[in-house]
Length: 376
Length: 257
Ligand SMILES: Nc1ncnc2c1ncn2[C@@H]1O[C@H](COP(=O)(O)OP(=O)(O)O)[C@@H](O)[C@H]1O
Ligand SMILES: [Mg+2]
Image 1: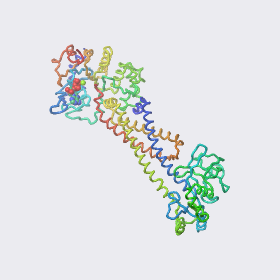
Image 2: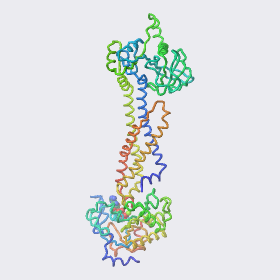
Image 3: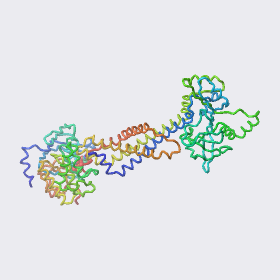
């Protein structure tokens, strides 16, 4: 006969409400972890999209994501001709604001060369950009339908294709356009002063790009190619691994510490709350526990009663929280990535928390004097 | 009264409860309270004895000592022939001892509110290691015997006071204890129900050859006790010096005007 379950059943409403409360708390912990995972994922999307092995950027710059970087567009030719490089493409990245009907949108515009590295990842609808101008491939996250026209700078673009999951490290949806369109957009959106200066200059300034991405021939060493590129004074080269590590360090590390701290705090709060709940549940049962001791129940029975209830609160709370999060994950404005191993880790942590939290109640229960059951 | 002859038969038999020079004090120095002073007594199977005395005279302390939940300060105590206390506890597991030897009946029934009547009785048998089905069957038989067999599935909150007390008695009897300790078992019942409960206890004492010890103020049950132990200031008053029942009723009832 399981006393813990019988007692729970007797106060089922209160018990379920308690579980729900704990569930909300654990749901928040799990979503914090999910938000962190989403942050890491999002941060790496733009870097991984070109499927490149080498990033060429302005000298002394940790571009193009962590710092700004500008290169002459003809750098791409030089890189493409290097031994060991299979293909290279020039790319630009810029954040622009646009309005679509009533809606204000912040977009990350990627300019790329048709048929070269830097093109959008696999499309989920529509077709790739084929014309030299005024076509866009947008991410679903921007919620722009195929065929929609949207004004960016002075020109109107038509959405011809859709990608999925392409966002920048700020969570803004990515749109792709041709390099020429992107460069004009960059020029149009620069401040008037910069434009005036450019106009005063002798003729047109040579067109610039933010980075050149390169794919290597089979067997070529990324380190060796990067070393070759670094010999040019005005260029800097990063391997894909370096680029990712740098981005994670600059964008993710702080967020990781912040969220880690928050998660730890929430777990601590959960422990305190579960401890208080278990303590109160035990206090409410003082007379029953005294009676159990008097009629000869061993400590194991009494500790079991308390521990089982604490673990039940934790387990049901955990599953309620996880279920809640799985169902609500789409209402988060940014990506929340739920990994089974994270859920498993939190489940384990919850069990530990419940054990620790039971200590107070168990201590109380073991101290209850069986004489309290006798007389009044 | 049937119990009158017990003293004559007693010599040949082992008392269920045997106390020799049991003393108990609480605190020390100026705050010292001597709750029991050199109490010696024998209680034999088959009898229902009353533990009487004014408030603060040591009744609860004595009952708790016999229940092995209050450690005496001095003396020797044998339960069912086993020496369990000789200036110190001799049995390591007093709870197990209670489970095996002692049944408890309380003023308020003290049934576990989250267990049905049947489960409350079964619990004791489960703790004592009875097989599941045998435990269920015995619990049901006991409830039948106490005429609450039809209330087996009811929770304590759904039982009347008298029904709950019967279930509590069934629980006390479940493991066939040799000693039954009852603290004010009839205080919450009217005189008719109190009489029925006392008759039940007498029946059990005879049937199981158990010693039933009842702490009570309740004068309506005095005539159903086989023997009376009267405490005053921690001393056991010799029978010849104890108040006679009518006077005793007046002396010991705190509530009487
Ligand atoms: N735990 C305790 N600590 C200190 N004094 C106690 C304790 N229990 C009982 N006493 C004292 O012992 C005496 C006997 O108490 P008790 O056995 O409860 O008497 P009764 O049950 O006859 O009213 C009283 O003076 C009481 O104050
Ligand atoms: Mg008392």
